[in-house]
Structure formats: structure tokens, C-alpha cells
Length: 229
Image (cartoon, rainbow, N blue to C red; front, side):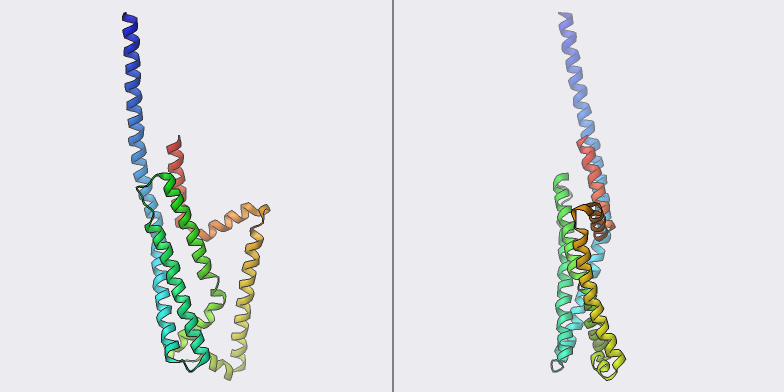
């Protein structure tokens, strides 16, 4: 009888100890979760600031483009340059807004797996937005300079180039180099997608993502690893 009672007491003690250990682990995990989430927020803050700056830059390009094409509808090259900058400015604002929205949609109270999915979606949107805005800059800087010169100083660079052969050649060469650069970037991207260069492709993709998202991803991965132990 005493032996049975001692076994029952031992089982109860083990259950009590196990419950306390589980409670302690849950508290430690919750504390670690809050700490890691705070660090993830801090990691994404520079990215948010950068996107806000991009949106402001895009808004400025819209205003500059509108100023040029509205005021020079009778000058074809200025009309085209202004419209191009208008459209590019809108695309820049949209790209920045998409990333900002992705950051805002990361619910820090969500489970780790859901956070990983949203962070992966944010990473994909950031890369796509960056490529859509960054790659055209190979040639986009030419109409940017044209609209900037006209809007800020009233100088028609295209007209000046036509009156000066060296400057005209410089503009034509700049556009040609930009087109070649854009094509070369596309070729390089296709080359890096080869399955035999998977490691290089990952490093290249990480370089496009930037430090903020990589730090946030690393902190979230470490939290997931601890939760699975």
C-alpha cells in the first residue's frame, strides 16, 4: 500500500515538475519572441525610411515631369521627356508604396511561420520593385537630366546638343551605352540563373535584398530554430 502511494506521489511530482518546466519554457519563448520581434522591427526601420525617401523622390520627379510637358506641349522632345519622367515618377512612388505596405502588413503578433511567409513576400516585392525602378535608370537618367535642366534652369539640352556636335554625340553615346548596359544586365541575370550556379545566384539575390531584410530574416530564423528545439 505504501509502495503504491509512493509511486503515485512520484508520478504526481513528475507531472507537476513537467508542467512547471513547460510553463517556464513557454515564458522563456515568449520573452525571446518579444525580444526578437523588437529587433526585427528595428532591422526593418531603415528599409522603411529608404522607401519613404524613394516615394518623395518619385513625387518630385512627377512634379518636375508635369512642369515640363505641360509647359512645352509644342516641343516634341520636351513633351516626351516630361511624360517619361511623369510615368517613371509614378512607378517609383508605386514601387516604394508596395514595399512600405509589405512592411506595415507584417503582423508582429502572428506565429513565426506566418511571419516567415510575409517576410518572404516582402523580400520578393522589394526585389521586383527595385528591378522595375532600378534597371530602367540605365537610360532613364537622360530624360531626367533633360527635364531637370529645363525645369530648374530653363535650358533645353536637346536643342543645345543639336547646335553642338560634340554634345549631341555625347547624348547619343550615353543612350547607346545605357541600352547596352540594360541588355548586359539581362544577359548576366540569365547567366546567373543557371542551376550550376545556384550558390552564386543566392549571393546575388542576397545582394539585391540589402542588409535590413537579411537581418530580419536571420533573427526570425533563429527564433524559429529555438521554438523547434
